[in-house]
Image (cartoon, rainbow, N blue to C red; front, side, top):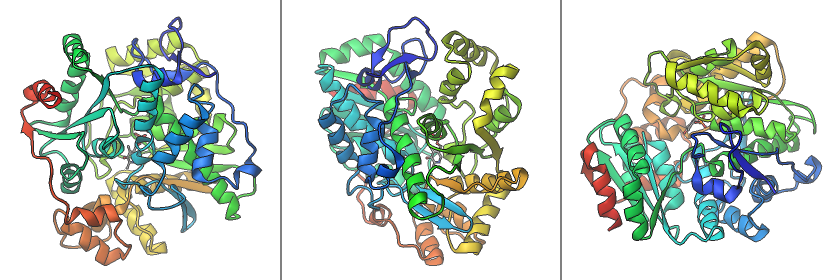
Amino acid sequence: MTLYRSTRDPYAKAITASQAVLQGLSPDGGLYVPVTMPQIDFNFEDALAFSYQELAYRILKPFFSDYSQAELTDCINSAYGPNFTDPLVAPVNYQADNAYLELFHGPTIAFKDIALQLLPYLMTTAAKKNQLTNKIVILTATSGDTGKAAMEGFADVPNTEICVFYPKDGVSPIQEKQMLTQKGANTHVIGIKGNFDQAQTNVKEIFNNRDLAKQLATKGYQFSSANSINIGRLFPQVVYYFHAYLQLVKAGKVTLGAPVNFSVPTGNFGDILAGYYAKQLGLPIKKLICASNKNNVLTDFFNEGTYDKNRPFYVTTSPSMDILVSSNLERLLFYISGEDAAKTAQLMADLNQTGKYSLNENTKAKLADFAAGFADEASTEAEIARVYQASGYTLDPHTAVASAVAEQYKKASGDSTPMVVVATASPYKFPQAVLRSLGANEIDSGLDAVNQLQALIKVPLPKTVADLFTAKELHSLVVEPAEMEATVIDILE
Ligand SMILES: *Cc1c(COP(=O)(O)O)cnc(C)c1O
């Protein structure tokens, strides 16, 4: 049985996977990690014949070992069905001299769908297993992408409610339209007259308000969070690394057992950390390339061994990577410190107090699984144009960052290992930035930009995007940041 422990408290009691899914964060502020690394029980040759769903089961079962075979199979089959428009779920597309692992064929056309389509099932199953009778209320502040992906996952899932707060003037027109047209009687979208930080701070306060928790418990509710540190979001992402590798083998791009590199557009470090777990499970990955945008705190960390968030924050065309503190990095610190929770806690305390921490030489040497680089706004635009001209394939700005950094890495290292670039969003999610990169002079606003991009690149519109043009707006509530808590109480009454 795989149990989970905190990255920070060496003495805390280990808990089951289903308990960790329900809790999200450990009470000491640490993140949950398996007490011993799970092992997979299949060989790669057999796996060549697996569907995405079978592969997911075989990889996830050792991580979620207190879920029965029937429970986990049900979760996986409910999550990865016709809501993904490609039967492969995560297909690989070969363009120019890279393989692009497309993680954007889910309902919100971005990679968070892969985990957030599964999490609600893992969570409601966990609630049953642990005899919870309360309804789970998911609270999220979003700068655009996560909230929508979480709602798509939780919409109409029995025994859940989801409230998403977003900055009324701080998301793109497409993101806002996607959220306001969200269906599902248990979904609640609320704009706030403030910025993302205010939304986030108030959500944390609502979470930490014990009196409120007690009051809601008497009415049969309890809060939970869907954020990316939850093991129910992290481990489902391990699957597509294996799936990509097996596709490359089947396509004759690598021989079974030979290594590949992955270049991953990184923000909170969840996606690439899943790649690190895939490598621990035996997937032949040579380098995991951590690609950042102009917010390049991770590039400096990998290259110098010092994490320093005391630096300007830039708003870029790859907003899901505009992050100064990458929460999931804490798990990597735990591993490279030799699973030393006290040491990890010390580094996190340093970060909290001074905004920075440094690794010693021994620990720094353990970062050799990774390479890192960043692409500024100009190189990101140039990469979108370069790939489009070379092969007619259109990258979104997040994917373009990873693609540009992959090129930099190949040139600087001379490493010719086959490269998989992780493609995290459809270009239709960011039409204006893409049009600008492709040299359009006048760029339409709002949804019109989607049509303009379609006329240029001639890739069929995903159904979820086409539907936006006629979808009815179902949510209209806008409140002051100070009214968020009262709003939640109101909704639940
Ligand atoms: C969230 C996101 C990322 C970053 O992933 P992390 O797991 O936070 O590192 C990259 N691209 C897109 C489109 C995203 O939505």
